Image (tube, rainbow, N blue to C red; front, top):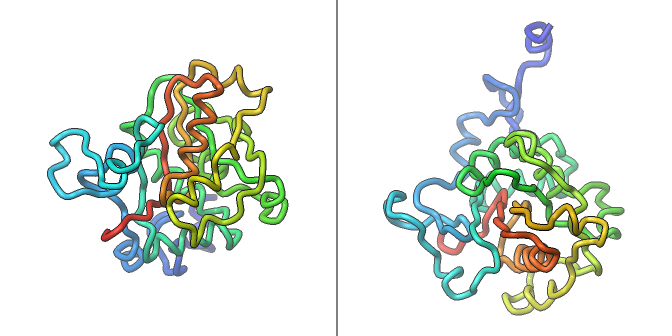
Length: 238
C-alpha cells in the first residue's frame, strides 16, 4: 500500500516541492541552502566556532559576556537562508508538518545534552498569542523531539504569565528586561519538574533572554538542571 501511495503521491522537498527520495526530505539545492550547524560549537548556545571539535567545551563571545543560567545548549541551524524560511513557515505559515523532520534534526543535535529521565519542555506562548496563532510552534517541536529521542514530554510545564510582545527590534538589555518574571511554573506542575533534568525547546534563539527566563522559572520550580535546544540560532558573522 505504501508503494502505491508513493507512486501516486511521490515525496516532495520540504521547501520547493521538487521530487526527493524520501518523505520529509530536502532536495539537493535546498539542502545546500540550509545551514546545518556542525563542527565545534559553543557549549552554552550551540553557535559554531572555529577550531577542532575534539578540543572540548568552548564558549562563544556572547556566552562569555552574558552568563547563562542553563547548563548546556545546542542549535540545529543558523537562522538564515533556507533555515529562516523553514522556521517562518512553521511559525507563521501553518506548516505544522515541518515539526516532524525538525524533531529528528533536534534529536540528533540534542545527543550531547540528553540525560536519563530528562523532561522535555517547550517555551510557552501567552494565551492571547496562542489564541491568534492556534498552535505553539515550540510545543510542536518539543513533542516531535520527545518522540524521536524517547523522552518524556510536558507541554504545559511553563506558563507565560503576561504578554511580552515581539522581541524583534529590541536591544539586548531590553530583551532581557522584557522577559523578566514573565515565565513561571504553574503550581500543578511543580511536582513534575522537581529534581528533574529539563530540556527546554524553542524555535529560535537570539539573545538567549527567553531561554534565560524559562530556565530561571524551572530552577525556581525545583528542577535539578536545565539544558536548552533551539531549532535555529541567530549568530553574528556566521
